[in-house]
Image 1 (cartoon, helix red, strand yellow):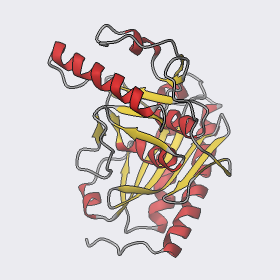
Image 2 (tube, one colour):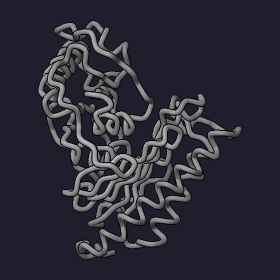
Image 3 (tube, rainbow, N blue to C red):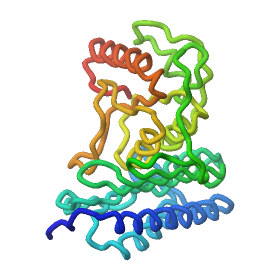
Length: 282
């Protein structure tokens, strides 16, 4: 099937209204499930899913593809259709990013929806309903949190920074240089972590386990529109709607702090790979 023609401003205006409406609806549905019992199981070992994930995914899919049937679709909870690779514009969706937190009754989860055009996010919404944090962004027009413009923090000092990651990660033996003391927290949702960095509520986020495109697309746009930087450990900026939609690592920070975080992470991953012969850190 042929791709749709490039989106004009009016189409993007309409899509921006749509994505915000649907993200709100999806977050409300997720919150409704959060407050009651629900079924949960494993799609594969160590990979949980709940009936809430599937219900939210179904809502988003019906609303978005019902309005834009010619757009492609890539979601964590939908079997991948390679037809998306032939579409200029693709919805990238994680109905509940942070399912483990959701299952444990913790508020560190979020609904993540992005519209990607020719490999780059042009619209993004990220909603953590239990924290009342609603992030939005449109390419070239900045990022907002609950309707107000946001910018990343100005800190350029690694020691004492607000880092979002697994605390045990920085205590591992493979680091060539010991990390300084930092204030470390970890919302389960990687998308929410990037949103918090975008809003200046944290300074950096690091994940050394592979992340999927649906985890990153909306949050990447929010962060970069807020003046932040997000790459892998080699400094490569992500492209989206690829055949294999997985990235090995995530390094995100305010622009002043990013070079220091990247240097540390790049050195650590190189050290791990040299010692173990493995490409990714389990």
